Length: 224
Image (cartoon, rainbow, N blue to C red; front, side, top):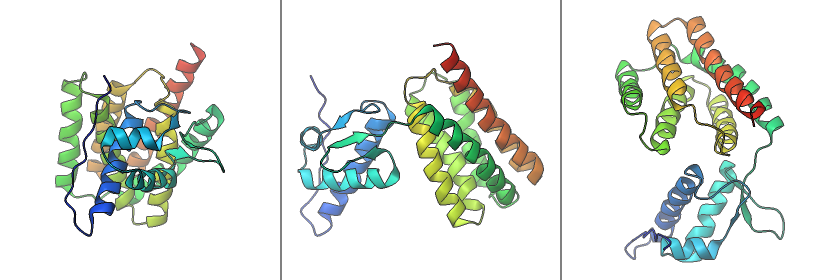
């Protein structure tokens, strides 16, 4: 039986916007959990039934996801979950090296120690419990990388980094073997580099992390 996700609300002036935002979060979670897979057609009717809401907030949520780059829509075609090619993925990873390396160098010494403690605690929890849901790993990953981007002091750079990370996230959800444990170890190394307050060390650690991920993906593809 298909699970029904209920999104309840009261009849108030902000209901439509609230429902659209909640539909956005629910559909985004489906994509990240691969309930909706790359290339799959996204049916507004099915989603509305599953979420127990009308099509209007679902459509609004889909346009939000399209602007984020998680889904796409051609003229006179339905929405589809975006597919990222191998070429686009590796080109994007190269850009991430450049931009996230620069962002962490700029953010070094500016991130609150309490914020670092919080994200480090998340990583240590993941390290101790590697069988937790994939969504928990993605959430911790996003928290660290977004914190760095948001602290670099360049809003345009932060926005571009977010867009690039959406592209690589979609590709990494395509069924390639997970590497959550290496990610956790590398994220802990990034946190340690931030604590050192040495911009060059932080830059090198971030670049090493992104290259490690790209190399592991390349090795996994070669083994297929």
